[in-house]
Length: 137
Image (tube, rainbow, N blue to C red):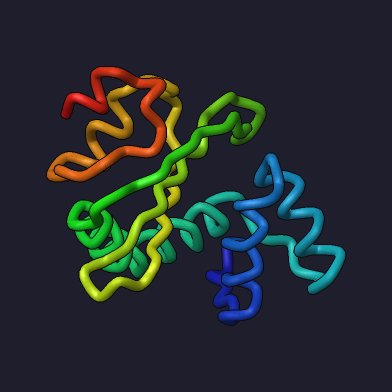
């Protein structure tokens, strides 16, 4: 089988669609409709993995910056990935330069373990105190 090379437009479109579309099969249909390319599932996974690897340092920096904020507001809502329920956690605060930072975390858990992991070094005020244990952190 011939190895295909896809351009940055298709790769970035796949990553964007992954945030909006519920399955890789639907993403394959959309890409085929707009670009005429039938991309294997393994390539779609690869695009998302490359994007995640490239963005990991930025993710870690935002997380670090949030942990020095004086106040963090957070929320969570349900999210489906390939038909399986997950949760999108949102954490909003200011970094050391005072600029607003927002971190999104997708996790299967809706429990306190997620904010405890994200806010591991946080010493300020948490704006979603429905989790008593987190507020005592």
